[in-house]
Image (cartoon, rainbow, N blue to C red; front, side):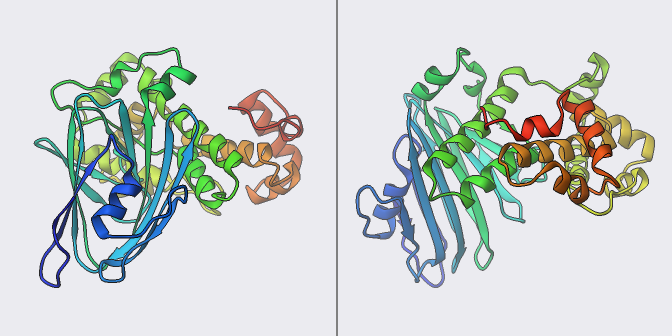
Length: 338
């Protein structure tokens, strides 16, 4: 419900139930007429400029895309009842941090931070404030327990944290690209379904394994003991390595300065968190990008070799084969598989 009506001198306060259709709740809250079966609504002009799209997919999976510029700040209080069979994932695709309060914990959601994806499990109460006069864009994925039962053997007990623990994951390059592809291809339900499933696979694999790559036990312990500000600094630095087609790659001293660390501490801390050295991490981003472009048949191996800055296609071919164990020409002939 809308607890505080929108006026010129007050904040809006909106309460949502994660166990229910989010778009229909927004329609009821703001008095927006909605034709059943249509998954798009425009924001009322007195509230701001914005739009929400909903794509309902099989097996209890829903994809929401929301973008807006509000006239007044809006506090959203999201409750997922204890008995709910639904889970939610919020991803902030905007450039500014969005603060969320989970119980007594406050976490900033932003794609370049460790908390790029925030989980709304059953039994959770999450509050967030969207400021006025600032463009915001987010994705919310709502999925039912039957979705997990359909596609996975694991129970995913980690999705039900105890004692109000905040559950989040980072938004890596591939996951962000999959979400952007969903947004670009909203008219193609098959492409939307494939990309949302691919995103969920990546996310749930992280939840299931909590894998940090090739780090040693001592490095994993170092990552677990790292303070929040160092983690934030490392993720901001990693954002500088996530553009696969950047013409220049920041040096270790430049990245270390951005993270407010010495070069040695930066390299050790980066590997502890991401499982790879900084330049290896950047190389993986580039190779993942190339593989995705080949699988989608958007570019040829030759086009990618020059886009990625290789002096000759043969050098790109050698790097790709070393990374994936396959020639790019072979991958280009495959169909996209989850």
